[in-house]
Structures are given as C-alpha cells and as structure tokens.
Image (cartoon, rainbow, N blue to C red):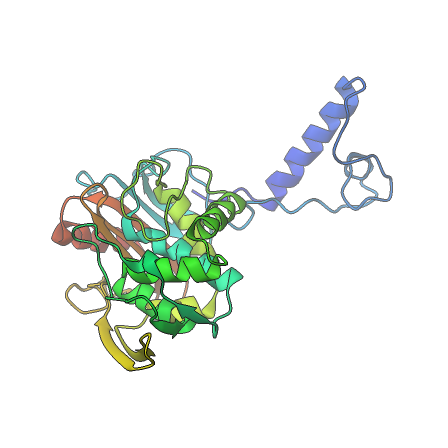
Length: 329
C-alpha cells in the first residue's frame, strides 16, 4: 500500500475546484481569498495558468486506514497492535490495529526527546528538583537527587538508553520553563502538529494514566519526526553510556548504563537483511511489552516498526523479528 501520489492529489484538487465553480457555493466565505496571482488558487488550478499545487500534509508519509496483513506470514495474534512502514518509499508493509488507542509506556520518551531537541538547548544545564522523586513501584530510575545537575545532552542519552523516569521529569521541568505541565502541553501541541490525532500525553515518562494514550500509527508519526535529528539517531544506536554529572554539593557522580534494547545488546538477532539502528522499549502492567524501532535494509532504506501490548519480553522480540523479516531488499 503506497501513500497518495502527487498526481492523484493534483487530480483531486482539480475535481474539488471544478465542483466549486460548477455547483456554486452562494455567499460562503473562504479562508483562501480569490486572487488570480496566487500560486495556489481555484482560478489557476482551473485555468492552468500556473500548474502549482499545494503540498499535501501527508505527501511524504505512509497512510493506513485498515489492517494490512494479506500476503504476509506475520503472526501478531498475541500483540495488541503492530505496524511496519517503509519510511523511505512510503509503503505500508504490515498493519494491525494501527489506530487503536493504547498505553505507550516508555515509548512516550521518544516524544519527550523530540520536544526537548526542538525547544531546548543541547548544552543547557538541567537541575533536578522534587519532581524527580518518583515513588511508583517498579518505575525505572537513575537515582537523581534534588540539586543534581547535568546537561540536556547527557540527560537525553540516559533517557533514550536506560529509560529512567526521574530523568524524564528533570528534562520536562527544565525545558518547560520550570513547569512539567507546560512541557506536557508542548508534547500535545507537537503531536497535533504531526497529525497524531489519537494521542494525548499526561506526563513525560509514560507511567500509566487514563488520559495518557496513543496508537501504533501515531507513534510512527512521532518516530518519523524524531529521526530527522542526527543526535537522536546517534543516541538510539548506543549500546551503553557512562558520564559524570554533579550533585547539589558539586561532587561528581558517575553512572554507567546499558541500553534496554535487547536487539542492540545481542540478546536477539534481527534478520540478516536488516540493520537495527535503534529505538525505544517500554513496559508497564497496563501497556504490556512495547517496542519501536528504526531499521535499514542493505541498501540503507529506512523502516519504522512498532509493536504494542505484547504479553512478554521474549514474545515481543520474536514478534518483532518476524515482522522485520517482511523487509525485502
């Protein structure tokens, strides 16, 4: 399944413009005022004096409305949702429940990183406040204390490799101008701008909340935007990270972490024709086991894959390997 082509979009624009002229619309007001000199106007579309057309919002995105499983050998019977998109060619290779709202767990942190990269300064110094004191049982933590400081660059590496929720809060509060809520508002604004209309974030880390949800397709949109940042791709490809930051007294604190991505760690092997660039893992009781990846085929063409709500770690990775096997060079 391919994305809508520009030729089709031009034809649709012509049809729509013709319908307006032939059928008439009374005295209705239009946001685009009539202007014969406009690069894009109904006059120029019909008269063909200027062949330009407006660039469609989704012209470079994969579009899916229904499940796409025919012709595949993928078994996703135990997964809540799954998608595999050829991000380079705009093709949908597989889709199950792509628009079903689900909890994203720590896949949320891809949006946290995206907003931080877009609105923050990579060398800015972050300071931990009381917001890093997360007490939820089982929450992944780096162990930040009030007064600890590190750069946004350091924090993003911890965030995307090891997935600590206290680091997510520190990033949000500092990039959000001192307010985690303001940062979450930015997350939701960015989601809307990307067309992720089935998404709503309630926090920057992904711990379960009834008002915190997304879809496999929306996560594709978010990941597709995040990978436009070279630093993001660099970070998600790391297998481990060690750095030194400072506590409230200025003393050095060194923490060494390893990626939670078990394909990068070598615990599981991707199909031979696929290279795993990196991605994000996520697990909570409500969300189940989740995984989102950026991969490339032997020609370097990129793919984005997402699996949500798998029942176990082992099943999740075997499902993902099965999904990636649909990539043909």
